[in-house]
Image (cartoon, rainbow, N blue to C red):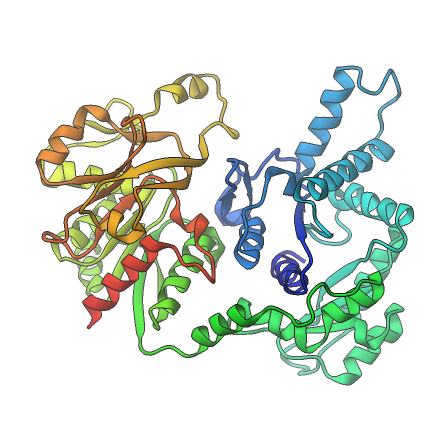
Length: 536
């Protein structure tokens, strides 16, 4: 089912195989008909993760990059929309030579072509393919058919891993294996038999449950892997190690490790830091993509959360992150809620789109600036930081972003020139400024000190930018643009000097996309360091 942990399981298996010396290429297949993840609502689908190439993808691609410590290419991601569009475009160009083009075999053939292309690009020893969604869904049929075909063509080279949840109904208090048994039968109905079953549950599986699953599913007991809930997803690879998942995989694939000992020393050291912190640092995450019905979906800002964690663990602190809805800082309770922010050591406003909650975010930014609370703005969070500064320091009443008010008197944030025609034409999908771009860093700034570099390359996802017409007025008023594009047209980082504020900085790009467990991001490090200092 959705959210059961397929992405973390895939990432963990990839890491463990990498630790044995194998070159691993993970691929995510999303069956939906969107051509990419860029047009989907974060509260329905979770975060949109941007690759170096600029492709907007599912958040699992971020998990793969973080666990493997590697940049992945566009070939490592596909959606149903991409696949169907490719087949239709090929048919329109007579690429099938006049044949009748059908869902089977032509859709599975295109899926297999993409899988093989990704493996060839990465020169991988092993390709790990995660099929998203839930068994039994109509939209997944073509992709499971492609996997089945791969198995037929390469019987000794292809394995199937099923990730299934074992519930413990509260009133019963007993772990139930029947849903997993039915999941295996559903898989069998597609002509596929799992080789390994990863059994997700609140607690570790006991011997009896493993035996029951093995007996009913046609696998050996050692091919049932226990995957209990853990405090940190970074424990998952080490838990899989306890159940010898990689040894089982290598045995089934008739492979020998390329390294005598698993190279997991750095990973284990990181996990120890996760569990052994000295004190905590409390961060308020002010956004609007939290609510999904009566529940909170932290996945909307998954990369930001993980980036904060890495920096906090590096500093020896336990990160305590509270989701604060921007709407709380508008209306009659705004003043009271703003004063409640004093309990936080730092405030972060992540990226987003649209008008809802904007005035609340601006109120929070002003509060952080005037009360010297460390503030970190990401993309929209940087743009609103500039708007707030223009309103309350420059005195430009009504200053705003054109995204919110197209007829605003003072358009501090304006649409990028090359984007205007795209919006007129309704070209929204995959048309923003996307992917990695360079930026020069000014000397004697917080950004330059954090990176300790003259130039950086960071990933973007935006249509709007700081209006060049206001840059001189802003800089004259004390705002420093410490990161600038090579052509000096785009303001990439804005900050206040340390003499005025301990940490008041925003980035037009998304630094969270490059934060990794073993290599935390320098700007997040600087933000957490400033937040910890405030606490002290």
